[in-house]
Length: 282
Image (tube, rainbow, N blue to C red; front, side, top):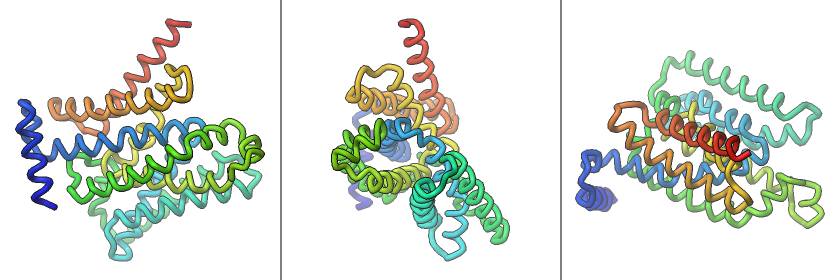
């Protein structure tokens, strides 16, 4: 497997006469963003429609406790992040359906509890090894194995969401109407919560918990400004995410700035441009 990736990076670097193309870590980063950006954009369309931006924020912040639990049980932090992220997604969805409290109140309570638990566990263990990568993101430090995992998860998620895309759009618009048409709205909410948790936690290593929600929301918000229909909503979100992800990574190389933050800044500029366009057109 290592020889395959080494041959791939050598072939790619030989095809592009640029300084950045000489480095394998840049190709890992670009290949990672090539799947993370459209994946987050696809999920982000539904996150915006379902008004789940705060929900994804809660899952990303479960990193605090996930890393600590992984270290506590002698596991790689990644496994703790995945496990707790999925558990948080299911727990929030369950409480939302069985409580009279507003969803943002429930999410705020769980987010606060998870962050507090993580801080306490990290303090008790006095161990923060590997934590900064999840905090700030390290897309240029991904390994070949992590890159393969991203593409495996991304492929499965793309297939599932593509199959359910219209159903999820209908549920977000009118859950009762969806149920009347035989769509299991409640079950699909749980499945979407689990998938969103997986996408968020798999993306954390690349862009960090402070940035992952932005990568979900901003391209989708840009698409909402520009799209004339559901199909356009998807393609504009994916296109803007790709543009921000790939150009942000290259710009970070030349400016020596944090890759994740640079990607989000470019994505924000694209959103601003779309908002200005709408204002001028109106």
